[in-house]
Each structure stands twice: as C-alpha cells, then as structure tokens.
Image (cartoon, rainbow, N blue to C red; front, side):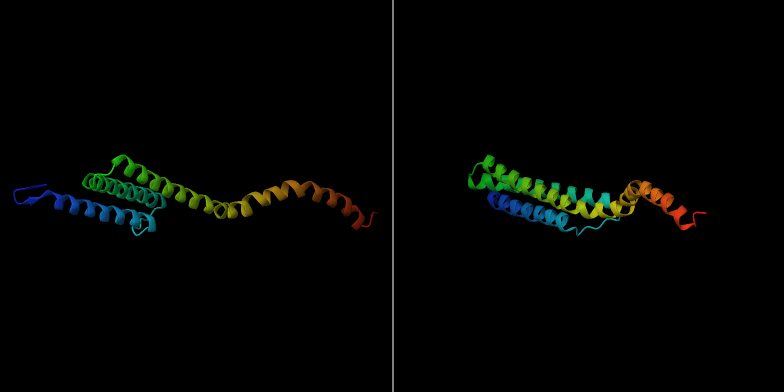
Length: 139
C-alpha cells in the first residue's frame, strides 16, 4: 500500500497507535481524576467527557487496526461495547456502594430525633402526668 514515497500502511499504524495511547490516557485521566475541578458536578461531567472522548479515540484506532489486519469490525465493536458496558456497570456499583454512608448523617441527625419524638412523646407525657401528682405530695 505504498504510493510514491509515502508508506500509507506505516501512517495508518502510527495513527492507530497514537489514537490508542491518547484514548487510553483520556480514559485513565477520567477514571483516577487527575483533572481537578472546583465543583462536584463539574468534575462528574468532566470525567464523563474524558471517558467518552477516550472511548471514541479507542474505537477509531480499533477500526483502523481491524482494517489493517482484516478482522471483522463488528466483532471488534462488540468486544469494545462489552468493555464499555462493564466499565459503566462498575461505576454504577461504586456509586451505589457509597449511598449508605451518605445517608447515615441525615438519618441520625434529622429523621431519628423526629421519629423518637413522635414515638416517645406520648409515653413521656403519660409518665409525666402519672408521676407528677405522686411526687408532689398528693395533698
């Protein structure tokens, strides 16, 4: 696949490996959070952008490699889709694992005191009414 002085096969190989490296770096950057943003939602969005951009670069590089080696692009795309699906599922499981810890403080400081007040309040009023005349001397 050489025309004149330009070796297009070498250019395709270099481009595919470059895209693999840049895409992998983008995915790793998004995964470990090297890019720091001041707001939580900005960081979440940036991680999604880096993951998506990295995955797109990897897919383009994979298509170049599939063309070079003569393998099926459909098989390569299925493998890549499975990989992306597993990564998305792992991220969702990680977020779900953090939920109980995030719910702990609102439960302890907001919901449990009001629940105790509702449940124990009537009992305390009844105890107060019963014991107060007894302790006052009953006159």
